[in-house]
Amino acid sequence: MHIQDQRWTTFVSRFRSGEWRTPIFYDMVMSDLGSGERIGNATVVDIGCGKGFDCDATYQRRLGLAAAKFIGIEPDGNIQLDPSFHVTHHGTLETATIDENSVDVCYSVMVLEHVLDPQRFWRRVYAVLRPGGVCWGFTVDSSHWFTGFSTLADRMRIKGTYLDWLLGTGTRERYENYPAHYGSNTPEQIEVLTSVFERVDVIFLKCPGQTRSYFPERLRWISDL
Image (cartoon, rainbow, N blue to C red; front, side, top):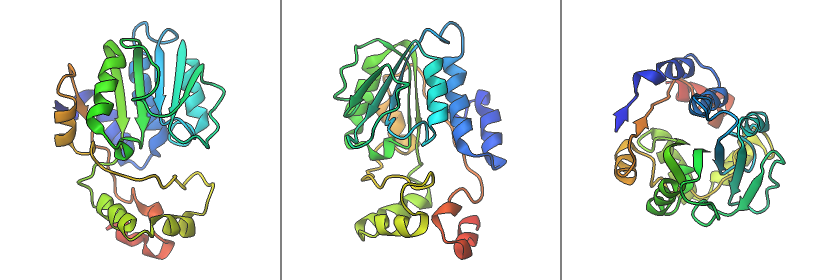
């Protein structure tokens, strides 16, 4: 396992400068999808695709245009999937009918924390990827204090109510309150779960104030601190 390979320094710097994460995540995926002969010829899988690439349909559609075959997987059956996908599955990666050794690039954005059986998930990722294929998993590091805050709010059954009060419903900032398990969310967990992979890079993206949106305006200094 490689911790923050030098190739990713530019992305880390962009995030630390305060740039919004979505275009950074997109460029990270494109750094693999757009390399060599993959661009325009690759099979790409969006795991948890429901509301776009990190809730942005524009970047999702751009990825679709760069792929020869674009597959969307979404567990929430109430979400209507974007027409940019060539194939869609309402369910999980583990249950989706995707051929083994057929995927060039797959990715998930804020999904790994919701995976109930991480071992099964990562076995399936490994199975569907071609030799040399790449999986990007953008997720929260559960060693960060925010996961404790989130877990406590879940246990007290106030998380959904709090997010509705703070961010409203149906907004770009308001993520769905799906159950979080944090079973694939530390470098140590990832190292064990992906031990069969040829290479694993763990890249830490952090900057002051990255959780400000989860606090009322008058209390955002707490997040900054």
